[in-house]
Image (cartoon, rainbow, N blue to C red):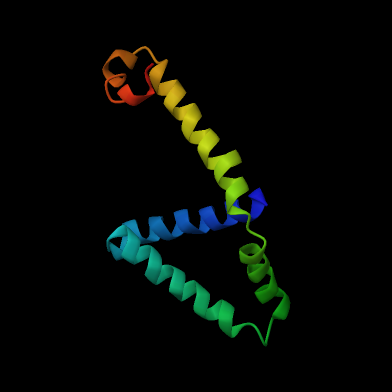
Length: 102
């Protein structure tokens, strides 16, 4: 499951790079336009390459967002906050995370 999400995140990062380098649109608009440009050939390939189409459909259908959020993204975020609070320069940053202090 994490492999399918890594594919989606890699494509999103590539699209953001393309937008930043050449399109120079706002991030959300550039990502949406490039995503639509990717989806159109995938939708048209359903009759020509059914396995290719099914591969992308399986990524979306089998996505377990709850597991990804709790086991992946949230743990990464918490480890980043922990590293920020325990760094040598944490005196300045502790005021930013006053809700985390007990």
